[in-house]
Length: 282
Image (cartoon, rainbow, N blue to C red; front, side, top):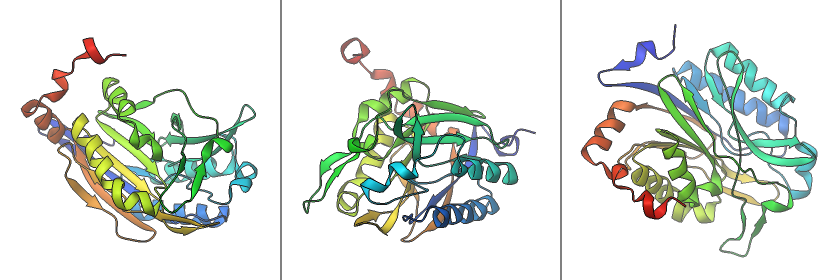
């Protein structure tokens, strides 16, 4: 039986989304155990799709990242597949360090309840910035950027994928909407400094301008060597209202999304129909 059959709504369909907000460290096995515990708790709460944050399985010093990259058939993905099968749920990995083609990618995947890979997104925009306080991040020292936008259909819902710094590039989100996305899944490790000012603002903006649901899973707290992450994972509806938000800490968050609200808002406020693609299609 399709997992959505019991969730049918008048004029739409709904899904329970589970978000595992993590505090990942430079201990991969401990991170995997933390992720599995959150998945177990969220599946027990009825989540049908469970998502994790960026770098779910490892965060450490830049020079340690390559050694902790794994191929797509590595142990971290295998453990997510096993959990998906055990609970009969979809799992979004957040992102992990993928070793492929002599490169390292910041990669997000989704596996289905049979453990099959149904989506793979490699982060397009790499975080090469100096944030307030003088801390410099340069992801391009480690990662190769992706070059494909990714959407995936689960039941009657179409999801688009983005990762962290992607959130600052509205053209990516508009492309995903043009490809049919109704829900955007954002995995992130937003810094404390930028998160306090921009995290909620950007998530709500992406939801409002695209009249879509946005579900965001973040890292929280301190991590080696000197990271500070903001957390505050959340679910935002197509009108920009935050309908669920995580508290501080490594914690589960869940909430319902539905197509009925999305279609109602898009019908009453049809801004997407007013796009001037003749002017802005390039």
